[in-house]
Image (cartoon, rainbow, N blue to C red; front, side):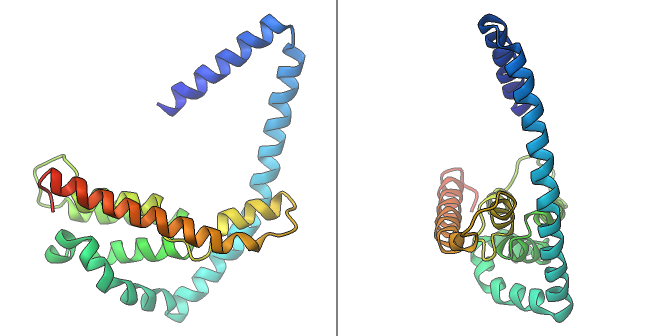
Length: 193
């Protein structure tokens, strides 16, 4: 679907470029956009490598396992079916812990592994409420260290890079709570608790 949207946008831009006689401007904009995106990606790689290294040190020190133990009592209420069956609990806590620590690139494989374990022994292709909730938390989890946003701001030369942390905490907490509440309400409506 996203590919179709981008294709339509590109076709519309091309058509308007032809009718306005600004094909050179369109070509220049495409090249400038490609150059900027490569520069941003290169600058973000360094920052993400730094934070991934810090997170590896925290994992080796046992901080992530302590965070997982701290989150486990809360997650029992958010994922009741998974914690009752015991399938995917470790992956769920690791996934949410990674999301809280700002390691969004680490949450996807953990979430896929958790969903695979939660789906064991089921004959249905329909996602359970716990699976949907995990997907929502993968996208909208409370973010203690917003590494991606900070690295984007640093790459663009922002003078006040870290002052966005408190607003990110407020927004990510609100998004997470609204996502969990909606999953629970829709789960009750559909009879999946």
